[in-house]
Image (cartoon, rainbow, N blue to C red; front, top):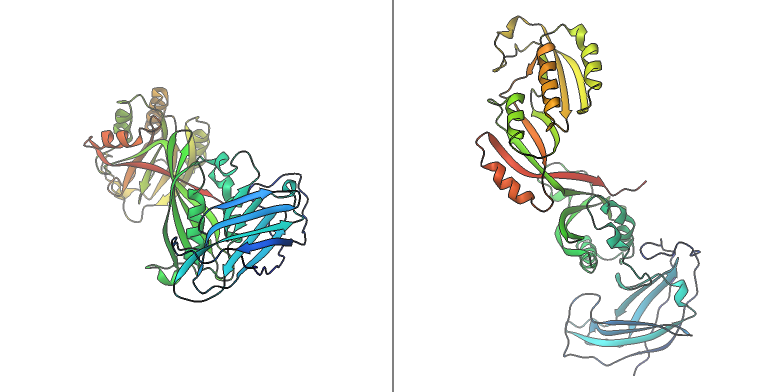
Length: 414
């Protein structure tokens, strides 16, 4: 058995996953003893900084580490380790010397004295978590798309502990592997790593990365895409994610033949809750031929109605002589229109439908520029049946598209 050289340095680290709430920050001077490693084993070949099994055992002296099949160069003569302990995080970086092109493996063993189990929250070796004190997995407390942003300290904490000399792809692959080690993650895949210099269109000067993740949320599979950014002078950080909204399907309708009356007829075919209805595209919204000074009254009436989640109104000058396909007059003589953009909710309620149609009639509203705008509906469907409903809705002739509905959430916790 040969003696291993341990190089020690202390860095104050930010405590992340597995942190005990009553732990006071402290830094201990580590004392290493009983250090050894085995000769080169050529029958086990792996690639990567961390390979093989790691045993962690706390004794009355401290913590004993046995790292089996650690990858080194064939001509190695020692193993160097950079070791830090602060805020409950024991962070170990191991690297064998030598520079031969061939690789082999060794079993490394040592004890770090003076570190008691009740002071250690988590242990990393070369950026990989090998020990956590928690009886439950903190990451998986947030294994749903609505709460996933709460994993930001854990994800960014992992990124912050990786070796500084690793490139972005190595760091994000390590993060992907760490995500795959979580019991609530069905699969995580690194989709891409690039910088603004690689963009086909204009990008802000920074580094980018995407990881697709499938979560097991109490037996239901949830999909999300995690976005990673980093300025050139700053570390990588998880900033936001997009996700398929559970129990929602988005439907769009042909623009030049569909009125709100047609939309109501369509949704009445199904016994489903309507999350949103709105008009999108150029010339969206509803137009009225009433005088412009009626705008304030109209907005007051709309804001009192229970089925709107968004109301916006303004006056449009008719410089372009707007023509409406579904309104029976020539509009060239009209100087101004009152325009309203609204988002309706819970419109499966037929009383709400009737109330809106009456409002349109009373205040002389019609759908504006139907060739340039289209209706969008967000349906609520049974959980896990989104794909079935998408295919079902696509069979209707008036539908131009049906897809999953997507949400977006910031990972930047204030």
